[in-house]
Image (cartoon, rainbow, N blue to C red; front, side, top):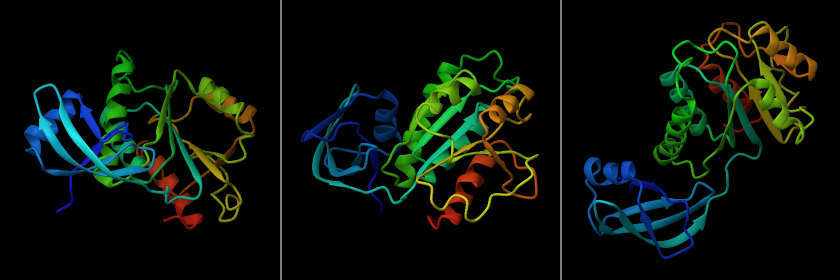
Length: 246
């Protein structure tokens, strides 16, 4: 039986005290772990350690940290998914799968055609939930590299933040109305791959104008229309296949 995996932001000291109430409840009440039970600790940056529970209290769980090693990211390329806010459960599903695929960066933007279920919601609360989901996905999948997650109020703001760091050569817009499919050879020489996907209602006219003005490459990834939560997962998987990084 695989040892429980615990996210531990700091693995530099011989012990770690977890004070996250949700994590404590999961470990103590759901998994029913006890003192001396072995666990596996990871920091989301590649470091992995053997551990054991030293003490369980209502407000904290203390772990012993031992045998720290570094696990190299298995992907040679840098992968980024730029996705919109969509219905909560669908967004959580998509984020889980993207973490399981090993994306390095997740960028979430508020689309102009925002689903009405989110129109009056406090998205900052959803953001906190998404960060928790990413950690849980790492714990469950065995991924030792927690992706960086950023949030933006619109697609323009998102692309402006990226523009200073890249020439957009490796940025692909996945679009159902694109005229070209992804080509087998157009991404082989790239070290960084980024994809943009749209919401359930598609990109707005203004968003398309923004992307066209930047000269972004628009591509299809299949013959059929994919759901908003499925498109980024299929897109990243497609690049993994093209680049031989299964």
